[in-house]
Structures are given as structure tokens and as C-alpha cells.
Length: 443
Image 1 (cartoon, one colour):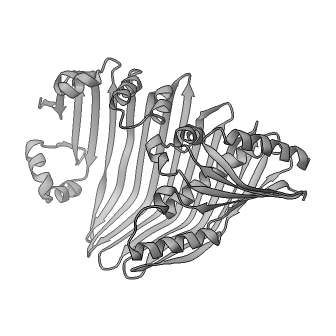
Image 2 (cartoon, one colour; image 1 turned 90 degrees about the horizontal axis):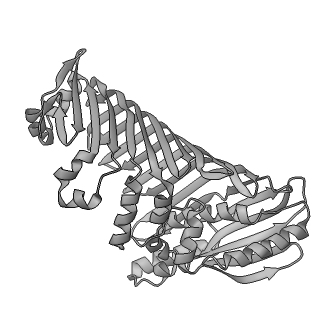
Image 3 (cartoon, rainbow, N blue to C red; image 1 turned 60 degrees about the vertical axis):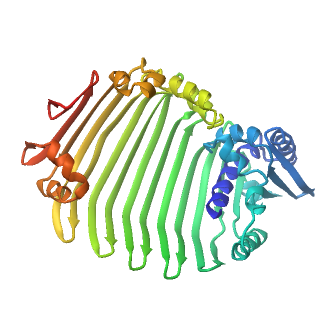
């Protein structure tokens, strides 16, 4: 419920920045006129505007999620990635927005955005007495504006900057859940009434339940860039200095120096995308069983993705099997290609046993002729439309460790690795309906 609130504030902030800056100039009266126009537009997109109060320098209103069928495609335009069924759970959710018209050196207006009411599905569910007490605390948090996003827009409407208010609160139920967040700041650029660049920095966020769980993330930074003329030409980066989960006497997981880069590009109606990620170290202590992973890297890419099919999948009812299958058939009709150019771990340490890691690459190509109905009815007959390959190189020590696991014994007996440059190798190929392992057919 908390995560839902935070995520929605972010979504609302994005499209608020867009709508409330469209046509902004140095003159406050023009900004007010534009806000009036865009609030009218929002009311045609599944939202309602309630409790509006206006004065010369301030304005307040509440934005309510009313009709999922309308606000789902609207939010998806700004990257929410919701389907109608999921979005229905947001009906009744309310966001408070306070606008202050100011004329300082930077901004023409500033905004405070905060949740004021939980979705109807949450607030009307039958809870036991303990759950009711927790719900009452959450509602008190909303009343006190514990979750609040503040941002200002410059006078030319070409940029913005802001922050989320620090959070240090607790929910008291059977256990006390402490929630903290510090130092969330952001800024960005606006071109042609579109947010084209965003930078975000979060110093620290944590959740702690005494003697049960603690989770902490420090120094998160991210950036987002999008082409003003095509939302599918975009780049997103993330980095996290440290992420830790601790379940006392059971599990400790620590990851250091996490980074990722995601890009999407469009050529006509076809999309391609890449995702690259690295983690410097992973430390796991599972009830005394210790594992250290060093220098992990994972890259993946996809090509020939039908953007129209993707957009349609975001709006249909997932229970409509006929439409879903038709869109999935449309999605693969362009000949999807997927590749994992690199998945590797440089080295490991398992219970003080040091060893080299592994390298893996893989490819999958789906022919345009693949018929999903035929695949469901006769998988082996349709598998000829799929070509795939996988190459795995791993150290002798790692293979020996894997061979000790009961789940791997049968596979190790059936498929023997090749010796390559002092390491073990598996080369798996699916082509023309035939599967080969290290050159030997198995089907």
C-alpha cells in the first residue's frame, strides 16, 4: 500500500509537470489560464477535480481517479505501464495539489503533490481490529502529508526542480515497522511541453521491523532522457551504492555498486531495446552458508518489437483470451530477435572456497511464420519456427560445486560438458526443430 502511494505520486508528478507547464510564460495569468484548460482536459481522461479553492496567489484542488478505462491509457502515455484490471484498483485514490504562483529569480509557480485518500478497494475492505489500527495510521500519515512531493517550474517553462519530503515514521501493529527516506532531490528539462530529461538522487531509504527484517538502500541516482518527437527513443540509467536485506538468524544479502543502462529506439513501428547491468559484489549468508559473487554482468537486447501491439496489450482486459492471443500473434509476426550477449560472473567464494565463475551468451530468433495456436496444440510441430543457441563456459571448480546439488545430478549424467581451454563448456542449439548439445542431437 505504501509502495503504491509512492509510485503514484511519482506518476502524477510527471504528468503534472507536463500539463501544468504547457504554454507557461513569465506571466502568472497565462499560467493560470493554461491550468484551467488542462484541468478541463483531465476531467475527460477519467479523473475528477474536487474541492477547488483559488485566490490571487494560491490554488488547491483534489484529483480523483474515477474511471480506469479512461485514465489507464492516459497514464500509460507517461510510462505507467498499467492494464485496465490493475488500474481499477486505483479507483477512488485521491491526490492533493497545492499551487503557489510566485515570481522569484527561478520559478513562475511551485507545486505540492500529496496523496489524501486511499483507493476505494483499500479503504472499504473488511479488516480485523489489528489491521484497522494500521489502516488508521496510514490514513493519519496522509492527513499529516507525510508523503509530499514539492517542485518548481522555471519562468520559461523549460525546466523544473524539486524534492520529496524526508520520511521518518512508524506503523505500529503486531510489530513496529519503521520507514525512513532521506535526501530525494530531482531536476529536469522540458522541451515543447514534454519532459525530456530527469535527474534523481536519493541518499537513503530503509524499512525496519525489529527482530524480523531490515532493508536499506543508499545513494541511488538515476537519469531519464527521451526524444521530444518519439517517446520510444529513450535512455534510463540507475546506480545504487549499497543495498542490504537482513533477516536475523536467517538471511543477510548485500549488493554493492549496482548500475544499469536501458535504451529503446524506434524505427517506424518496430522497436529495439537493450538492458545492461553490473553488480560489483554480492554477499549472501543463508543460515551460515556463505556465498560471495564478484563482478557480475548481465546484458540483454530485443529487436523487431511491434509498438502498436505493445500499446494495445497495455489497454486490453487480460482475461480476454481471444484478443490477447491475437495481439501476441501480431507481436511475433515481425520476427522477434532476442539476445543475451553477456551474462557472466568473474569469480565466486562459496564457504571460503574460491573459484572462477562462468560466461554465458544466448540467441533466440522467432520466425514470422510461427503460429501460436499450432504451438499450443502441437509444440514439437511448431518449434521449427524458433532458432536458438546458448553457449556456457564455466570453471572446473564451479561445475564440481553444481554437480553436488541433487537437482543437477540427472542433467550432468545425461549431458557431458566439453573441455575447452582448461574449462568446461556446453553449446546448445535449437534449429529446424532439432536440439543438439555439444554437437550431439538429443531430439
